[in-house]
Image 1 (cartoon, rainbow, N blue to C red):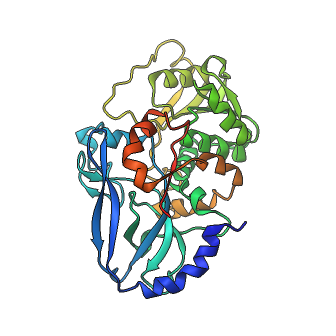
Image 2 (cartoon, rainbow, N blue to C red):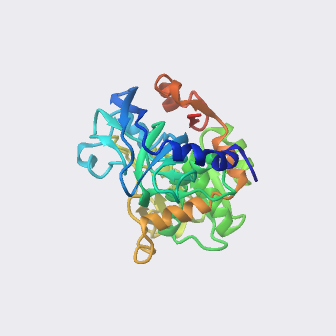
Length: 345
């Protein structure tokens, strides 16, 4: 598969060599108070040894963690733990936040010039990052689809936490990007015994594009061996508990920020000996931690994006210049069932 990003990779390398010593004025998105963001400029000096300059092509925005950051809903106790890898500023505000950018190396080591890379960096049109944080994008994966790498890393870690195996009956509650990636990966692992559930019937189309069975909460299948919960609602977690089989594992990926959540743990919860556990991408799952680094996991997640069906998750896009004014619609879901990808060039 060849797209414009592949063509640009070969043509941009000479230009990158000419820009090695240049100072660049970059623009970045900053969240400055609850619900308000703006683009700010900063000067980038030539990169230091061991560092590269990247010109961003696309970045992805999250309706999960990032929305909580943007709305000031991260508990103070979690401010240090919720720092993004290359975040600037401190929670709550002002803060430059984000963790899913793809672009091309325009300055740095000769061996890196012109390479397409994924970096856990906030929304910014040009930026510097340590060479050790760059992950080369495989040739078969377009830049736009590669923005899913951070979410795929979350999905992969969740399956490692759950211990998903062949022929397991798997249910996913919540058909956002993370839920859809978990379900698509589950289908690759477990076969056809995978269903995704959402209150929004329009998401059935997304499920169908990924070859997944779709159900409403009222029609969610029962006796599921593994249930992943991603809806960030108490009602969704209740649905997960009700659908779980005897001694099933319920893996909660939702993060609720400062919002309290009430669930019922009476009824058959104890008699069915259900296992309720959290999965969070900040730590590699215990089953892999001894021999897998964070970088290893990200490389594996990026490789799993060699799946053209996933283009359905990044079909909508918005220009970087328009992002501050569009955020309210993105957070509310008015912009579409999935958040748009941010386009820089």
